[in-house]
Length: 443
Picture (cartoon, rainbow, N blue to C red):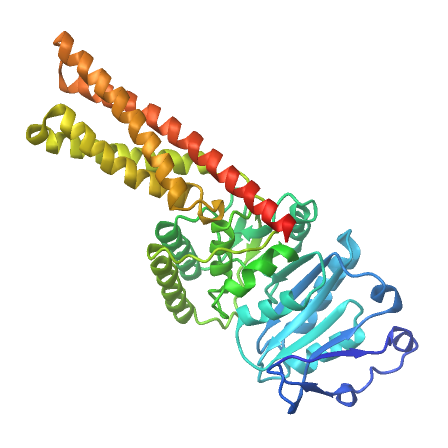
């Protein structure tokens, strides 16, 4: 439950040496979110805005989720605010999101919100890093929303490169990466092993292409995450990973920035507990994808574009389907003969390959249904059967049959079929994109 509370401008009074006002006098009663007539007295989002700031919304709003961080909160926020004021060329605001702290964190956050221009604070009744980011981003009116960990482990010099491609409209999501070329990282062996192991498991299980899911240094275009946040079910440490996986599967462009990162030696994160929860989250996403129930965002923020690595994924699926075909062909050759085994092996490998291309190469955002997938599969199958049958027939007629010649004939047919399938799938994906655009315009 969150309440928004505004405090009158106090910068002028503070410059005259007066003390900040007592925030307890600004508590208010807010209606419950369930719409009932009952009310609850709760702490909410405290903001301090000067008249100049209230006239223009910030281009970037940076959330800093905190839980029991009374010792470092003030120094970190002052350092961050100083960087934004002196070195960041765009209007930027900071929102401290206290998620159920039990120490003096909220007291410190409230004082900072009341005394430092461009800083606000929000208090949540429930714990959860993901919940804190979700609430801050959902309430923001800035063009770009971002978050970073309160320990400022990531060097702030990477913040402008992080948000620049979002402000230009080139990308929808941007993340700091400790594994991208050019990154410099200092941390202990235990955290290094856990982090690299987790990202490796994630890539093996979900075939994601971003290199670092857990770095606490991310930003996004607000209209892009508006369509994704309702789909993210985790409110804790797995929130980052789930958001990125959904973004990638929905065709969002994710920009990576190599960062300079120094581990917080005083971190109180329970690595083993987080790792266990993250593995459960990965298993949940794998089950959902395997069952064909992967959630697709309906946001208009994404325009269909050839995704990075599409050619690599297409080639990978094609290679696996070719290997499967050759195994089937030589297993069935003595039973059904050359021509019969060719047709059967092509039918199976073309069907499986086309479905894999539609799901993994182009992704669910392409909007292709079973009819379009079947059309591409039939065309690829017909092309492969025609070319391989002709080639195998010529070999038999000339008497030059051999295992090598059969493989060459088969590969020629498969390459031709792959080109036909690729052209058809891209054309169908583009047609689905145009059709969805017309529906949006009509609505």
